Length: 493
Image 1 (cartoon, one colour):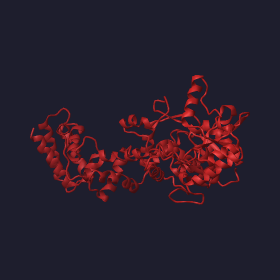
Image 2: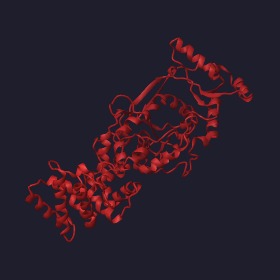
Image 3: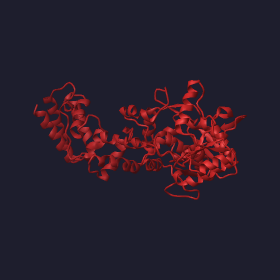
Image 4: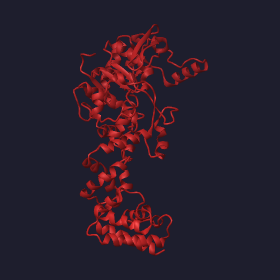
């Protein structure tokens, strides 16, 4: 294996939205390929047409690009091993299925779904493990071919050996030995001519020269069958690694798509599209999911390039990982603080424009240093910085009244701050802060009362970035007009 060029793949089914499980299943093979100078492939496994969802493939592609996990071969860019959609490879699977039949490693099965259901019910009634009873396995090759040629509906099943055992190796769990008698004659080719995963993925991994298969743990029970199929063809076996499962935040039970509603109530989601809309960054998301299954320190902050440098497939762990959304917030906020001013400005601008605000790019660059330390998600910029791009603000009356004071007293404070600021030639924080602090000392008021009223008057909110720096960016005329409006509001009480 070490002499072969490294080739890894992400092979999702377009049956729903892209979630963090998909993202991690793409991240690790991407890191391995990039770390070792290999090739990373996107393959769309769309043979389950009953569960196929239009638009799901594009969401997968968009999600990979958003995360920065750019692939070298795929359905939209092509490559030397295409097609990269399984529904476009039907003839390849048909040929391989019949090759197994010719080798006596598989057989056509003509049993109806009704018969199979009856067999299953009878087995359950007798407290037996439900499995195929082998009726068509007993047909001679000539009988089977005659029925196929006659137009009988059929599937092709793998002819599982009745005796002996098979030993498989999962990189994370070591050797696993399974008795063949515990395995079923599983369907490889369905009656509609499309393959099941058990045939298609094995054929594609061989044809596309995949050296490492990194996939979800739900496929671990199927691994003995998959190795049987690979060995029946006489192919080299790729290295298999089955990833740990994601547990619910409580640590009780596996996280599923159905848990989205509960997460969304708290402002979180497991779907990438939601996470992007909620203001999470690809850097934060990747850092978060990378450490759920990778045996490095849980607080390690890494960019994608740093992950590539440090990644080793032997560092992966099979231990289940409970989803911790607070960790996501931590990593997201940390990466936001690492962005350059220009980069962060470009990332938060769409959130302002989406709210109909007219964003001045010069102002935007000035406010980024004030906002950066306060942002957990990118959309937090709205609650902390929308007032910079508004012509005027509408303070809540109750917020304008300082603690321990009434409306009249608060109006007097607002009026006095107006007069102090109006007397200044400019509104830079170096010029305005000293006289305002002197007023606080002279008046016997506390700073929270005076600056609290001034903050609400100029920004329209009780919490904002640093007051004097914010006022300087808002500008002298706007600040004076906003304070004047607040004085009028208070005087009406």
